[in-house]
Image 1 (tube, rainbow, N blue to C red):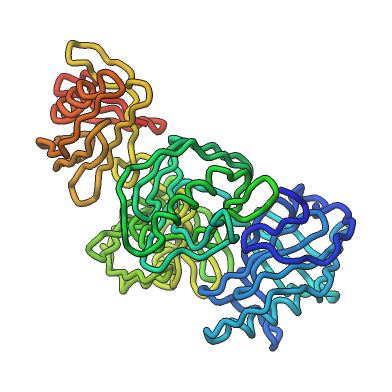
Image 2 (image 1 turned 60 degrees about the vertical axis):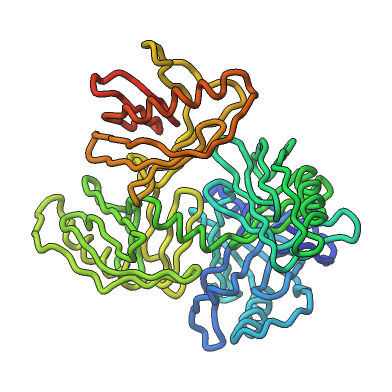
Length: 499
């Protein structure tokens, strides 16, 4: 990224760049540059550490002497320099918007004032802490994972190719999803689009993109917006993931598209995924990893009930989601007592308390984080041994005469096993759906329904589709190992292999 370009929250005129020293806290081997930092605590006017407003995230990016980000309402910029663990930040400048939500402007002003009070810093395991001249902590940030996958992004603004950066037309919905198969898909407002992409450490290349060929008359200008949007993102060279947003830029750092996380899809991901706990708050200010030899899980159902194993007992209870807010409980559980491993009952009690204390959630890639007003309560990772909660991509299938063959080039077959007992996906030309039942390693799939399109290219795609659906209906068992799903018939012969 060009050193004069702001990242996640938009470009603004920065103060002059000051040559800076080493940005590594001695002994840690971690740097403040190359990350997007999200504020999770700041010192209020009474000298106590407070959690920032969930609805007004504050971010910081450090780029060789230039600091910038979002103050919760406005974008800001400043120059900074470091020497060892010492840091000085010049008074920031910012844009001049007003945000009416209660507390946002006061929080922003306090944050910008605190930046000027910073005298030292430390970085450890993805946490950036800033201290004042007395050594007291005044700001604390956590690094935001720079991942594109696993999130559905909704367009908030784009470059129109003529007049600059514009907002999305009212009444239109433009989306983007970056798949693990290096395919980008979404809605351009009228038509669906798709094509390859590659991304690595902040750089990205998109296209060539193709789309369906419908024409939409309403709202006025939707087709012009679609054309400009698709043209803009295919010139993208850089990307930054911020607090609930994604920015695409060209090689000169000019903004091309700004997306925000679809909270509806985040809720869908929450409820479509089997989660396994990795760490939890002890209730005394510390966070511990899950005890070795225990499995703590959570399944957030579409019926508004969460259930799982707390390590010894099974638990259950209601939950509600509104945007990125969550309320869990009251929780009930079975009443067993487990003596092994040592500490399992204490972990169970702390875990259930942490769940009930959570008020916000965030999904980044395969990680789910639950928080109270500011501190992390529980972290989960996607349970990769689960059939549900992921899209499976077919890599090979039985040809019906005893052999297993690879997919035709330039074809894509998928399967998503929903918690509702429905398997859906693309069979290469058409979309399909069927009922299924899975228990332990047993899998049974009913007769599939499908759309009725006919595809001529590539040669053989319709035969491949027929063989795939026939094999799916013959499913009898399955196994998942190292991210690969293998489906077998009643004799144990391989029918389908997915990744």
